[in-house]
Image 1: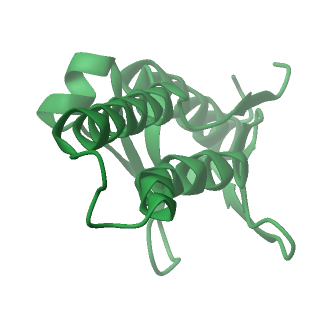
Image 2: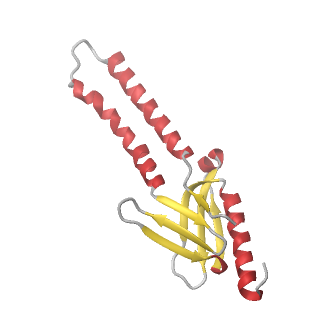
Image 3: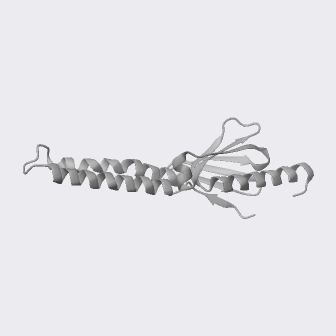
Length: 155
């Protein structure tokens, strides 16, 4: 099997960008619609609604910092922008694959994926993943194949 690289979804990021644009449009409209000829606040306050773009930009950058690579016998998760952390899990040791979806995530077709392995502390997780059930099924199938090969030498 060829390695499959998985990144978090852009759907949630796009929704936050759209919400930020709507907030800015509403703020600009309110500023010019409700302000008198000589507004009591300085014009530079018009730039303050741009602060609403900080959360979507942060989400966009964080999305690019997480990579999950699914191979035949191991699963690798890399996180970080300037300094990277790489965690490799043996496919045969994966015991629990959990998919969590909030109502908003279900509407967008995304979810959170949590993996737990035997003998290692802490779960590995990825948030806002496209088609999380399909990815979970692939991981479970690959885990069963790896465990079968390790135990009996058969695929």
